[in-house]
Length: 103
Image (cartoon, rainbow, N blue to C red; front, top):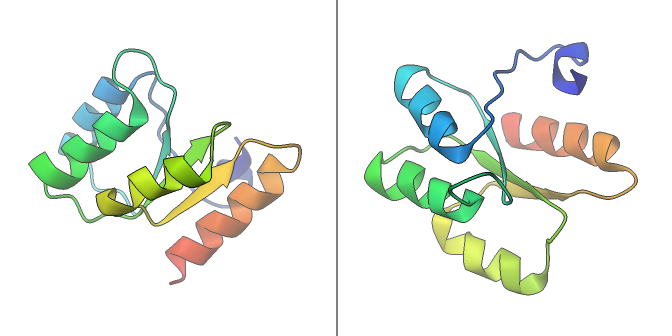
């Protein structure tokens, strides 16, 4: 809802495996990927998108567990940004989406 209220259109998936299916059927300008998802974790889904599907679409990672180690492990996967789930999540998310889309 936040993205749509800001003028973006958005599709939502309940799991990483569903998100992968959606990406196979649609073209997206940006992907927001949570690390904690049912079934397949976000890191594994990003590996599939990047390595198996050769997807170059920017990916922003969302998580409550953003640490230096997490970011270091995600860098080889070609993420474009990250947003920690903190008190000011909405503001940070919109800023990061705008930064990545306008890069």
